Image (cartoon, rainbow, N blue to C red; front, side):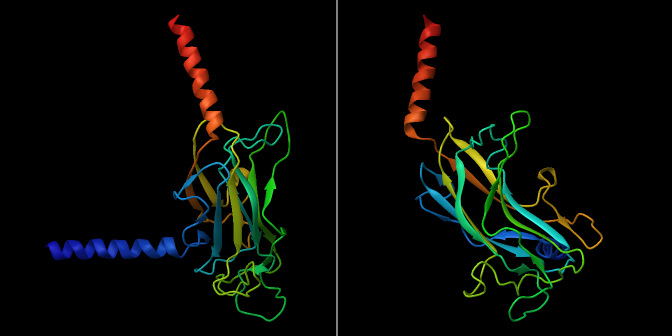
Length: 240
């Protein structure tokens, strides 16, 4: 009976795993490179570098794709100030086509071509309706010839010059404007609410697996100290 139960559990797990692994999506390659000494924690001026790869092992037909990084600043103010302190400072994106069905020499015409030449912060100052700050990594559309590849033949940011070439690299730095420690999740992928989606050959929205990474941002010591002194002063005033 115990063996039978274990077999059922193993079968259930085996059935679940391919579903997650075979979906269209994006993944973080390895552990992000950090300039600091504590994983997932950025002090003032420290940076973190994400290497990202698009995946489509099930050969889902993709006619359009918009990939962004978001979540690091839910709403910027009208001047574009990033309240969390996490700021995009560099990186690279593939300017080649993605989801090529097979390797072709030179320029191919079977995938989606990126409209961006570098990671690009998207924000428009608007006093009435402040926008979310997000980093655009990819935007491509080809309704005439949908992409069918898995991603393994894509050339990547180095034009295929290095082994295991990645599609995107994005570098963030803690440039604090916040007075308190921030705990945030940086998410890479699609977001319907931010008008970034994956679409199929019939213009339908496709399911897309995002990748997220938890970060803790430490504010500038002077800012935290001033805030603490201010709170202490208020407490003292109340006691009087």
